Amino acid sequence: MYKTFKALVFGSCRFGLTEFGPASSHGHGTRDEALALVKTALLYHEMHGLQAALARANQAESQFQLKDLRVEAYDSDGTALAHGTPAKLGKNLLKIPEAKALFINPEFIKIGHSAEGKGWVQFQVKGGAAMQAYVERHEDVYWVCSYHP
Image 1 (cartoon, rainbow, N blue to C red):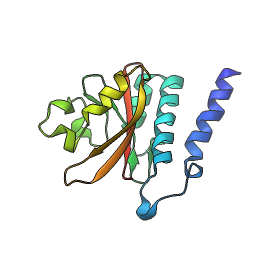
Image 2 (image 1 turned 90 degrees about the vertical axis):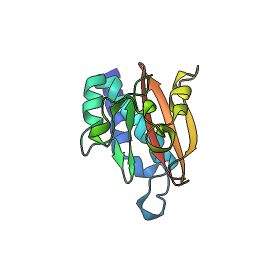
Image 3 (image 1 turned 45 degrees about the horizontal axis):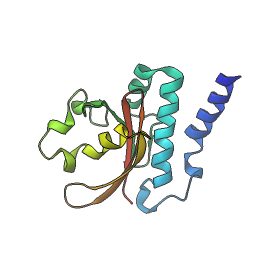
Image 4 (image 1 turned 180 degrees about the vertical axis):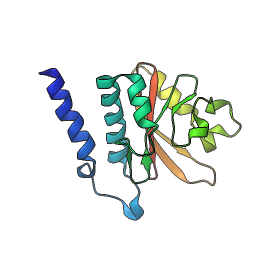
């Protein structure tokens, strides 16, 4: 019964992302869609295990992507476990100069380390563009999805 419930919830997350809120212009993902993608990754992680979730997140196309949004995963040190750029996988992106402006924001880890283990981070990327990201920790993996507000 519990597995059936999870399958139904997972299916609604996977196929119902466009129902979370109106799509923004220019094909950009929304705050609600970013949150839904992280929740989809978390549920997949819980149902299929970490390695399967990371493999799925690292595929060129998966249910962890929508419009310009893509779920990423990091360990507690900032090493990329799932990323849209394969060359960054396995690298500690916090140790790269200008990491905050280019790859990963240290606040992602700080939010994940918090008692709640989840939350929103506001930051700017190189060039000054504003971004927001939803971060949620599950089994010491920090699942993140950023969007342009």
